[in-house]
View 1 (tube, rainbow, N blue to C red):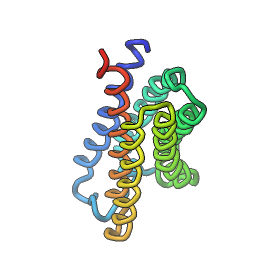
View 2 (cartoon, rainbow, N blue to C red; view 1 turned 120 degrees about the vertical axis):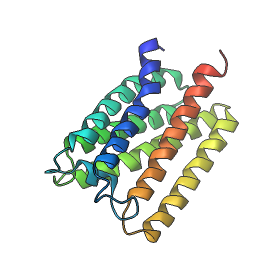
View 3 (spheres, one colour; view 1 turned 90 degrees about the horizontal axis):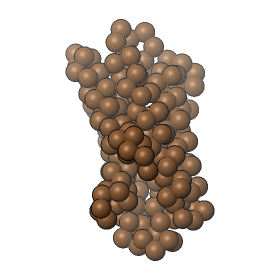
View 4 (cartoon, rainbow, N blue to C red; view 1 turned 180 degrees about the horizontal axis):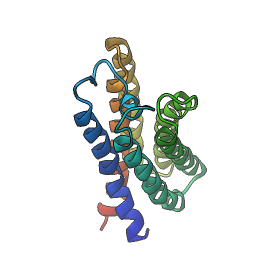
Length: 188
C-alpha cells in the first residue's frame, strides 16, 4: 500500500467527524442529538451546510482511495465483494454531501451509506474468517450484531435518528481502524 493511501485511511474519519462536530457546534441552538438526524446539519438552505457536507465529501474520496488497495489485500471472493460493497457505501457517503437533506435522493443515499458500509464490513470480515483469520472474523460478526441491536434500540428510544446514525458510524469506523491496525501495523 502506498503511504498516501495509508495516510488517507488514517485521516479520513477525523475529517468527517470534525465536520460533523463543527456543524453541531454551529447549530447547537436548535440541533439535538436525540431529536434530529445528522443530515439536518447539512440540509438545503442551512447557512453553513458546507461545514458538514464538504468534509463528508473529502472523507468519502480519501477512504475510497484507501479502500481500493484493500481489494488487492483480500484473498477470496467474499472478502473482495465485501470491500466492493464497502466502497459502494463510500460512494453513498459522498452522495450525502452532494444530495443533502432537502433533495429527493438524500434519503436513498443516506440509507445506502449505512446499509452498504455495514454489510460491506460484515462481508469482508466474514471473508477474512474464511481465509483463516478467525479472530477478526468473530470480531466483525460481533461488531455488526452489536451495531444492529443498538441501532434498533435507538430508533425506538429517540424521536430523532442521530444516535442510531452515530452507532452505525462508530461501528464502521471501529472496523476500519481495527482492520488497518491488523493489516498494516500489527505485523510491522
